[in-house]
Length: 465
Image (cartoon, rainbow, N blue to C red; front, side):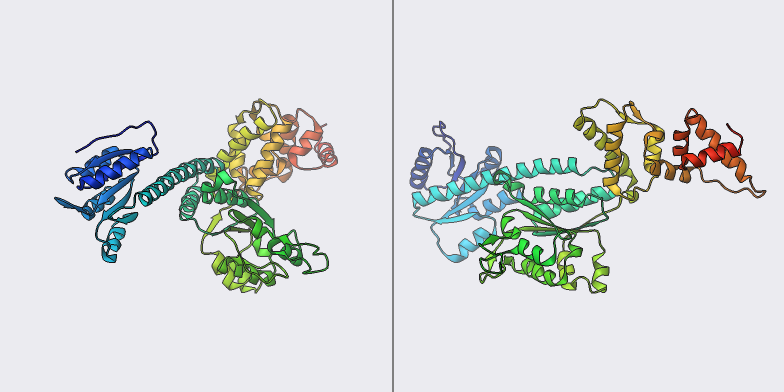
């Protein structure tokens, strides 16, 4: 039999499968009064197909159904991947039956005769849990899309980095080590780690607290991280929470962990292992729920060999690590990043130009080694946007070091077997510079990376006045 009630108030969809009419009648009436939409079935025939097509939030399933065991139906529901919670109903209250039901994927287990109020509480909790689960999945998707927009790149290295981080975020790891040269974007990646891992906490604004380990002396860094009790030292006039406590429920970023002194490293390791902190001068261990993100531009394994970094801390940190390659080793990302920064800064400074890069400028971008990595590229684009107003960025508008490095790479001379006149080559380059600069000696000197006085001397030397 199949019937539906009044759906004026819909708190959720319930599917009740039981052959005892008295229980069915009593239970369905009570649940409809609570505002649930209820479908009732007394037969196991096509039950799984009906559950699949109707997609209920919760299935209440009797273990002893004529024609088929409720445990078999439960296994079919789970095997087909139907997204629903299953509560088993039975008069058999033995532990063996309960364990078997939970092993097969049941969410809960209720024995007959049923306590209606208890059934209502269990169902309501499952409905709320399901709503939260879907909300978390939605927020994770939103943050994942944001993350993909923040981490710009088309290289294999960046794609693998994103995949690895996504797995860590889904697992909810409690600690991440990020390594890479200065300027590669370690803090940006750290913020993405925080956003993805705590995407379910956005409604309560999970804190993100960055700490620079090089900016503070060891004693001050310790008091900032762990806090202190009143009277712990001369200036401790009152209790103070440390940054680990303030980051509870969110993330703390320890930037440049490689510079942390070994004495403090041991206390930090204890935090990672026990997930508790003790304030300076305090006696109590305070539990913390914090995602610890650490970054460094140092080779920690080498620091371990030199005795500058604890081996046990290194291995603990290295459990979940992300490494950002320098920009020179992922050239496929240079132009996408440059275009991204160009769009960002033209919007930031409310400018309509520049709109893009000339092919010659793009070649220079790709041939340059970018020792300052992404930070250097970002600063170059910002400078150009502020100072230039041409539609396309040309080679002469690029910083001298980038253009010169490209020139040396692209136009490296191969000395012929019969030799060459260095003076004639030098004279020709000076003539080219004067022509390109429209005989502006200051600009020509800049193109040749020599001083104005040196250029005047060369012009006089070769009789080019």
